[in-house]
Length: 464
Image 1 (tube, rainbow, N blue to C red):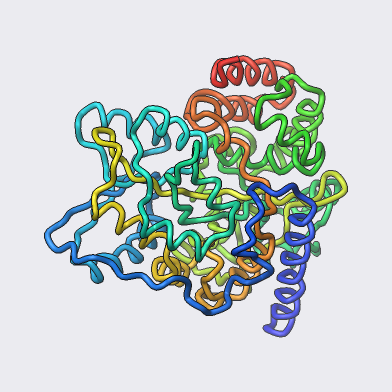
Image 2: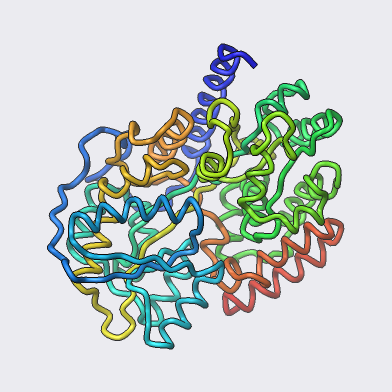
């Protein structure tokens, strides 16, 4: 495809991302309280660089950070941490936790070797850690950075019972579908805007000889994201909030309808790369690479997941984001396309005293600063909730547009439902939502059985 056509298509889709994401976000109920001192208003990227940060000399200090990240995500994070080490003289090591972070942290604490900082994806896990007395407040230096650089919604997500325990270091727009430009061109299709169009487009791509949709079903969290986007668009924000809080049961008709809709994709073997069995063997990174590793003869045409897909594309393939790899908003099932946000929050672990050390407080403050966000953003595949970060910190137009849409939403967004739930239900391998939706991918006709399992697991996790 010539560069002029590529440029035209890229421009059209970037505008579509921003328009849909911003419009959808504006109709959602604010997650945080009003904040007369901040105000988003697209203020992110203003170039003021946020609050100044004067870090202490920590020469001789060592810190350990625990997170689920591996590969490019881990490397990009450590590139930002290198700045902290240079500024303070401290040394920081990284330990991967595996998917069951809460179990890993519990075992480390029981053994008397708690990491200094953990980076957690689930709000529910932060609350559980705080209830167990494992966390220390972020400290005055980090509070200053948060007040200057973050809207109230993101600050509130990191707080619990009046204490600020967390700094959201990484955000995610989890309502994006990435596609191989060549596969779409060869099939003669355009990005769909509705769910019906999406399923029809997948069928046309299949007819062209390419498996349409790559699903990372070996990682249960990807399947929860599929469900959440469909549920938010189809059932609406009010029911989404009620289900997230387990105020309505998982046997509710609205859940039946969402699973039925998802089954229109999962129930057609020809629409999934490798069929359902192949999808269940495919982890998230592979779901991306098999879509973009071979641009002329891809193993799949599309992969659904958040903005962080870009880092896998850049790290593991030769595809160019914005040219070979393009993106469109998750298709509307109801009246509007959904906008589901996620994020990773840093917390300081102090199970013995409940107080952070000077080194822990300094690292938490650094993670809330534009210094950390700017270096991290430049690596690609990263989206920051830091509204003081200039958009020019992002490496390409696609990521800049996604970042602008997030910041322009201010406090108005819906957070990932599984991450709001207790870890036993929303974030643990082999149980809860992860297991239920893997079972559903394996047998999309057993909607009733999946719902009954979800409700029994939710009732136990929420203590109903």
